[in-house]
Length: 326
Image 1: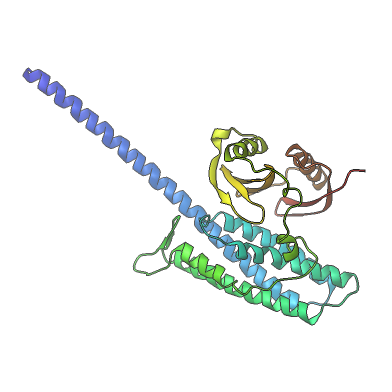
Image 2: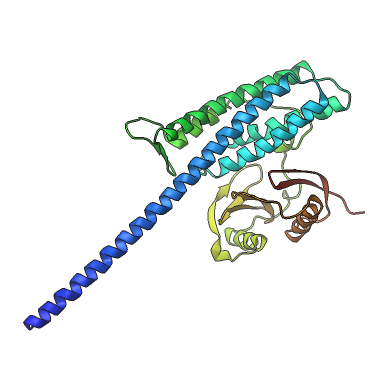
């Protein structure tokens, strides 16, 4: 090979090396930018969870000293909103690998139980000593969970970084997020069974589905098809998250900021969660009820009747119940 050929070969090699280096730097910068955005999102969710738990603790304290049905009804509405927000914030944290069923159950029941007591007072009945004790018990658990989350927030405020498995801070020995959340979950080990009339009561949460008990189990591929149809997206746009082995077993998929569960038996839509923020109102309550009813019918839930709704923070929460056709 001539001297000119060697020079040309060297030039090509140098150019190729520079291109690869530039590409690697660009990828590293993109990865760091993504990690920073993810970190900001996690810390924002953790702070939102902390604020919601503060409000839940405050309102549970108020409920203990309230004997007015109107005041208790207002407290229950606030609690419902705060509990919904807390579950949403918790769902946006990297806790997918943990079993936090008791934590979610407590957050659900806190507002539900106060609502039950408000309705009882409104009907002229008195709150029993046992029910007062249950409120005190719920408040105790609220304080424990709030303290655990506050400690995580403090770590982050001192330079801690949340990742999918760890919380790290310079020169500070800290537990992983999973360890802290698991410790918080362990505080619910002796959580009482609450017997009352409400959608999150233990009798309801532990009840098997009459709709699903005789249905055949579907494959994960079939579940993916039904999830894509329910979210109006392509099957290849869905990512499989896990299999949820709770009272209603599901295949769980992600699509952007949406998480959807498809029941293993029958292939029905079990739940759809949206982790984004709703910053403005685009419709009124009547249209929201109509749209929700039409959507339920489109995913296989026919003869559903709206029983009540409430609007808070630009979100209309609607409860539907099955109505047997005449």
